Image: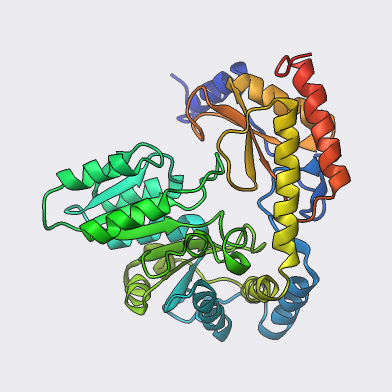
Length: 395
């Protein structure tokens, strides 16, 4: 018998390598930009969530530096002890106004915002009705809550209705969906789900991580995009994608936010954001409200790239967003496709099980506002070349 109780991990890692689906970490050298250097190779970067290019925006840099010089590098405590700074309160005021809600609370990540909120709101006597492709953080939060979990097929409002009709009367029910699904890039069926919320008295929750800064007026998200203000009880957003910094938040009524102050475990037991991060997030809201050209350019680039992939003959699924999957099917083949593109100067991450279902492996691409047409044209040319080389395209 081995003296190492973790020896089994080597065997499992070897299995991943034998199947061709093992993924190492690509190391970024320098700034997170549309054209960047990973593992020493200069590549067109189609794998970043930096939708608007705000990670390097001058206004965010300036405010982060000013906050560090004024307040130091850390907050020194959790929010409920000594770690609530005026900067945190200001960020939450700005986010609430931006999302058109009464209040917000900021978490350390979008993952903890989802998981902590779902676990705090529901208990073992309650029910969660969830889209089958919802983010892993929602799934984990549902499990932590100990509520009964009912899953409906992706975007199938009729199936969700059937589940709700069969539930016993009297219990609390949370109806939950992503606003934009992170692997397929399609939008949640929010208008239909909100109609169910109104009819059955559910708590409606939307994870809008990939919609913030991308959809709606000035990037307010899918609730604004669909005109659903006042009909979504819990809105979750992120500060680490289009916002360009770090963290997550929940927006809703003042009562909801005060309750999360008392019961959301990630909020209660994690040190609050450093001053630089908080100030940069506030600065990002400034940019969203005053520089609409970034969103316009994001969508212009997105349309150009999607049309190019489609013209080449690739299957890009049902994407409605800058997240554009290039469907491959076989996981090992998708990873090989990704590796060859990287060798050719394009970073497009291969995604397989368990992140996506078996047989649905793909390359997940994200176009940003800061890509140039020359960079996107180069990427399309490399997709065509490698796709034909690997017999993923005819010719």
